[in-house]
Length: 539
Image 1 (tube, helix red, strand yellow):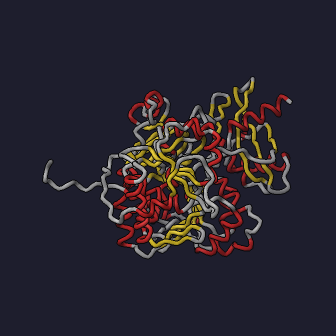
Image 2 (tube, one colour; image 1 turned 180 degrees about the vertical axis):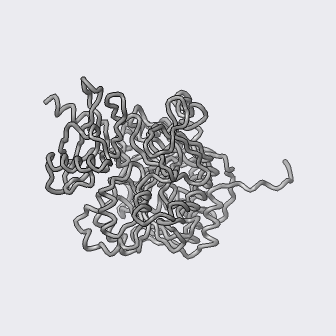
Image 3 (cartoon, helix red, strand yellow; image 1 turned 135 degrees about the vertical axis):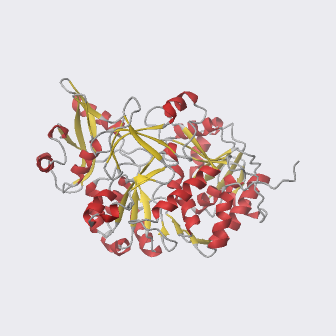
């Protein structure tokens, strides 16, 4: 045993203590619940201590959480890692068999669960023999009906008020699973240090125009808490001293009311969630709440038509890019010093792209031999990256880890172009790319152009087999108004004439569908769309 002082460990409890000290009166809000940062810290410390003392959580035990975006979830974002455990944010939109698969693969020793998910667990109870302790919470006054031996979450609040951290900065803090559009979901983990460096980096960029975040802002993310750490926003809000509003289970009319009531000034979401928010029947009634709203859009390429609709309502929309394996932040379309010199409309066009790298991110655009491609806004390459918060690999999956880090760079599987200002634009997922006559068609760009046509709701381009060209594009479209195939083709022809897209990129077929199928994270499910098209074509 040495008497030397311990080195400073960059762990999540430091962030929480700092927030409680520097911004004690700032609030975290969920429905009728409101806690100041200092009150929130006291609750988290008690829960953290109880997880160790009452529930038996040990260092790097994986602790699963099944819940909507609630105050309990927010508490566990900090309490589980502070107890030495690894927070497993379970994707509750998965079907039961995938929920079970991810929990079993993670070897979750403890499960903290909202009561509404108990019946699902009861149904498959015999399959969860690896779970040592169940902790349940809920809002039902009549109590919880279950045969599971469990600890009541409220009992965790009777823990000690003094926090003694046993965590070290390189301990695992979180684990979650990718959406699994190819094969089974893959687990990725991140350490305390990675989460903190990620937080510092995004704070350093999002204070630039047009986001311009300050401690006066009010954040309400529309990214599920099971999805890539809510893009790091719970940590960012406490780091910056920003009021934080938890949306609960999404109900878009009530979300509009919350935005107006709480004075929300910043949100983040995938494009489909923003689309649903702006399609809400009570939109006009609460339009005043949008006048100061800024939205960071990632998870999929930002359709120009959606951005223009948001702009009409007074919402400042900014593109961003990242993925599960990178915690997720890689780029954001804030204004660089060079872009600030450009006219306003030109700046706006750049802000709709994926943007420039966050500080400490190394990003390259490469060909199949890992050689760099030109940054001319036209040459397409795969995006490969390095950053101090990239995952080391897939949890308990060395084979897929080897392919992820081929050549010492993390391979995103995304195709993009970079313009003369260094701004990235995503043109396709490698697995979704349409290759016609040996050349890639940038389907995301075509989707964005189609989205600008009046009457178009959501759009996704898929590739279908073609005897002559190998593949040709097909547009799958939902309607938001009156629109026909002829009208869309005329719309596309105007963009061909202007030079924005090439004629051979135009879809061979346009198929109207009632609803756009989505993955569990809200992206268009192109795998399902290909199945839908195949059944239509064969029928």
